[in-house]
Image (tube, rainbow, N blue to C red):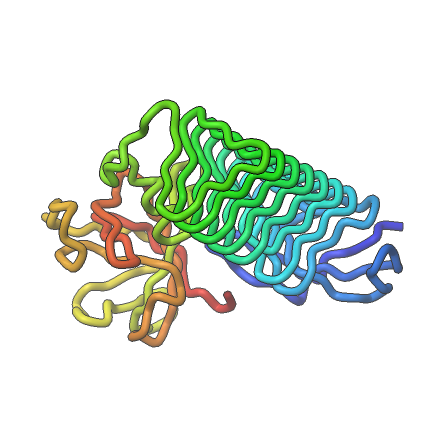
Length: 309
């Protein structure tokens, strides 16, 4: 008997993906028969073996996999080709080709992305971000607003916190502490946001593009005129249609202005005006700038109204 099934009547939409709530078919580990869990796209996302589980409003989709005795809970998101396995616990975001395993924990608003690996008894939490080819291992802790990226390695009993950045080929080991505004690197990387837009968007909005298509799923509030047709809040002649691209003619290409001409998109909680939330797909090449918590773009594709988030 399979340990769980998909509840086809209980689902949510994230962009073009449909995720279904899971229900336990039998008791195992801490889970009781008929207990409801979080949301997954298909059975490939969660192993039918051992005691792994997705709780609450957590979401696992794409080609991501949760297995062994791993737990994904809270408002966690595991997507892309990410792997969460063994006894790992995730409450944050794990995406890209990232792996979290062993007894590692990722929680709070923390993000693990790219080819990063977090394992052993390591903990990544708070608003920390670990990405690139970075490794966090042993009893290491990365937290606060700290960032570990590039080919950096943090292990042993090391701690990286505050606004610290560890990157390049840097190694932080033993009982070392890196904190405050410290920067550690062995191959200096530019901080020019316009040369590293992906990293800047990651740090600003905690979002990442689909690694296969280089597109982001973002949102904006609009006025719904009828099913599939919407008007911009501040210019009702500017229309959006489901499954159609919207292109701005002659947008302001100045990367240092955030409120100029273009299509403004962001995360769902950013928007204060407008009655209807729609999801849009944005290719990296169509992003003009990222400032003040939003992207300004020259073109987006409308995916449709978000019925549940």
